[in-house]
Length: 195
Ligand code: ADP
Ligand code: MG
Image (cartoon, rainbow, N blue to C red; front, side):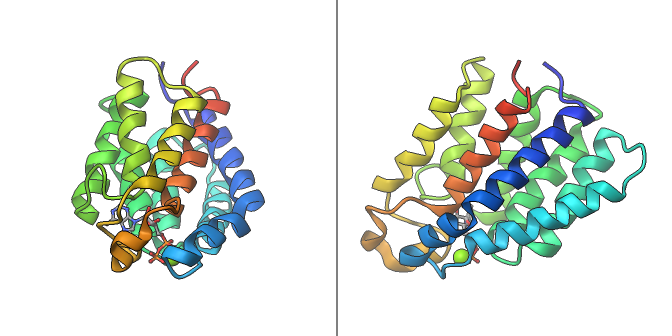
């Protein structure tokens, strides 16, 4: 499987729709363990992505990824913006070498870890990204696995980001960034990314 501009355009269109539908829910998830803005942050970011991509004429994959990255970095605002932005910047940097989702998402994940200093088990978006990267490498990614990964953040103690201020009291709540990452990968699958 190779990622193409057509797949990425469809992917971003579906992710935009999902964020629009789930904006209130994502901010609700961010309320008990954060500052209640994750849905609004992601909606601003995805509006930026939509506008940015619409302005491109005959874009290649690199420019498409770069435009997504820059829109997320400049529009999301919260901690998630630079992290998602870094992920897409890594994909822009590496997509001339490889167009394999398994490899590109792995490099993106490394970028997120480096940028935010978090790792698996810290109750962040990484707890969705890491199992997705592993499943892609094993050619066994499914929407069920993505959802399961996001659900798995409920039992974790937050070690990074705002939720970490709550320590043990963060247990019992889903991580909002893990859920937005769930939507990101569900959208990728729906866009034909792993067919
Ligand atoms: P903020 O926390 O600044 O309000 P958001 O609410 O938009 O930003 O995003 C919060 C999400 O960002 C968290 O749910 C978590 O998944 C993710 N996040 C926060 N810090 C980190 C980090 N250091 N590494 C990875 N993900 C992080
Ligand atoms: Mg927040």
